[in-house]
Image 1: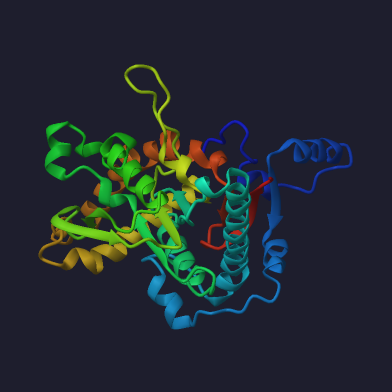
Image 2 (image 1 turned 90 degrees about the vertical axis):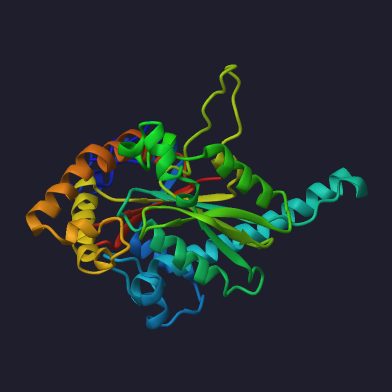
Length: 344
């Protein structure tokens, strides 16, 4: 199981047990009163969408769905429509707060509107990329913020040659495998309202940064930043002083959560599907795993999970869960069962 960080809501396994006895209920109420989160069932959350229309078709949902992820219109309606409504309210409230600040500071302190930045975090294979793409599609349908951009932190991984030189190839995806300074500067520049900011491009086919290729963001209304470690606090500098971290620029953050054993199973299922599809491309970095037996290929996948993805999840990703504004807790079928929303 993912280790529950201090101050985070209970592990999802805690909600699968028997109904508490009368003597247990007061203790549960006290814990709820002191928790920084409000826990909601799927039905309670779904009711919060009110009359928000569903702007996506089944075909559009299929296009944003990640390989191995299970999502349909019911999931979009029950989980992501209420989330898009909540985020729309947050964007509007942030604009009102900015206006109040401008009034306080006077004309000399007047600020132009800057992008609302959303972070989406979670493990490999948990479905965070699908969550980010769905949010992009849904939020862009609101008339108040039609320009929504999505950037993944993969583009800020160090090139494979650099990872090899530093002895970090076996730790790809760990915090030290990223150019964290460049990533933070990128988001800071977008948040500052610069007209154009560019980021490197990563290819999952070649498993490396694409030389000379850049993704340019043009002053969006909303920027979504998706990645494993986006909620990590900044590390102290060599002089011991606290630095500004990536999450310091977020206006809202989402952590996609599930039991570790479910994520592991999803990882293997996705690997099998990739072996039958994308890995077949002659230019794929993983082409060699289509030329060996399935058992040999799955031995590699299991080794990769045990030595890289699971340690990274338990040591670096899961401990940041309690830093998010919203936790989406998935069940074994990839569907969100419960949610925890940070109180204000």
